[in-house]
Each structure stands twice: as structure tokens, then as C-alpha cells.
Image 1 (cartoon, one colour):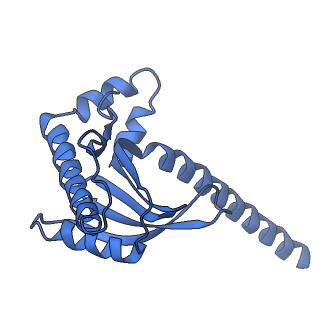
Image 2 (image 1 turned 30 degrees about the horizontal axis):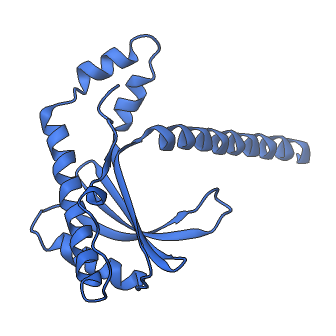
Length: 195
């Protein structure tokens, strides 16, 4: 009786272990391929000190005040490196299939602001793209890149970037800080729509 119990208990543990390993592998595959970088931007405001919390509050207020429906902004804590590293606080803004992560924090004698705009594909799209030989072709046929997708990514990026710049301009205008040049206000675009 004890041997039978031990046998079933061991089998149960093996199934749990296989399940956990499968979950970790699938999570690794999909988190690495689920999101594509659309654009990013950063700046360092030299000789300037400001509260991260105050910056985030001003940014959320500005971003949400424009009347675009469906935008959600929440605080998230992301690892600086591996899962054993320290965490850094970001604001994550979600709209449609886009994710916008912004970080603002003191850095040295200055204040650093950066953001990343990610485009998220559906799990079905990722699975289809992994089919050998025809996955890329099927993905292009079933999930075409349309002008609408390109335009909405550009609109959201422009909208969020203008909110960031407005907050930066407001908090630095009376402090004698040099304004960000027109060239430095431009985000770095990545072509996520090529397959």
C-alpha cells in the first residue's frame, strides 16, 4: 500500500515538474517574441533635480486629459536586469495593442527621462509565424500591416511624446534650464512592421 502511494505521489510530482518546465519555456518564448519595439526616446536634463513621483503625476494628468478613450496608465515595477536584480518603477500606458513604458528618475546631478513604445502581437499571430517554411507568408496574409496600424502607432507615439515634452517644459521653464533642442525632441523609430 505504501509503495503504491509513493509511486502515485512520485508520478504526480513528475507531472507538476513537467508542467512547470513547459510553462517556463512557453513564457520565455512568448515574452521574448510577443512585443516589438516601435520607438523609444530619452533625455538627461543636466543639473536638475525633480521628484519622480511628481513627474509621473504630471505626466498621467497630461496624457489622460486629452480625451482619447481606452487609455490606461498604471505603475509597474520592472527588473533592471535578471529576476534577481533590483526593480525600477515605470508608468505603463496601454492603448489598443500598444504599450508605452516611461521612466523618470534622478541620475547623477541630473534627471533622466526615457520611454519605450511596444507593439504587441496576438498569441495566434506568434504561433502561426513559427510554422516552418510558410509561417512568415501566412502571417503576412492573415495579419497584414495596414495603413491603419502604421497610423495608430504614429498617433499614439506622437501623443505620448508631446505629453512628456510638455511636462518637461513646464518643470524646467522657471529653473533656468536650457530647453531641449528640436533635434533632441525627436523619438528614435524602429520599423516593427517588417517581417
